[in-house]
Image 1 (cartoon, rainbow, N blue to C red):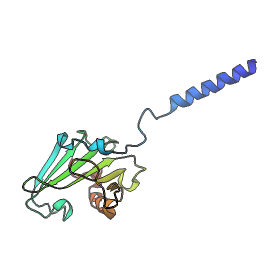
Image 2 (image 1 turned 180 degrees about the vertical axis):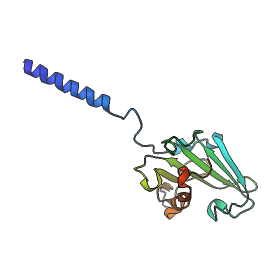
Image 3 (image 1 turned 45 degrees about the vertical axis):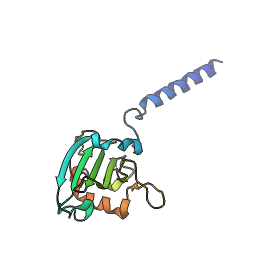
Image 4 (image 1 turned 90 degrees about the vertical axis):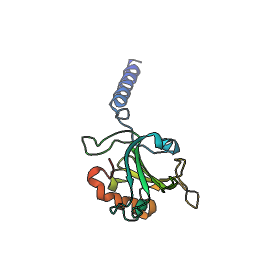
Length: 169
């Protein structure tokens, strides 16, 4: 009986050590944005408001149109960390508007774990509906991913890799 008690105590102790050494409580494994994460984005911190053409954008975000306004919001007013990256869960939204303030497009990016999109430090790209929900394509699938729009988002944002793929902050 003593042998079984000793074995039980050893198993209990080993379990305690494994649980207490786990880093699950130190940092979440990933952040996977849902519709609710984008709700009320217009109330977030407005980090930039740009009017008119922006040659750096080319055709993206109506960059050649002198009549548009582009507003960039960030959910958490965060800055690059000491590691040169934004923290997991950072969300940036860009709203492109016509002169009459009607919406042309709403795009977003959310910082996930690096394993999601390792070539772009975990960023996921989105196209949002006017109400801030994740947009749907013609098949009803969410308009999101590491390769959204056949890689256009990733390709363009690669030029801002020194700022963790974020142009505006």
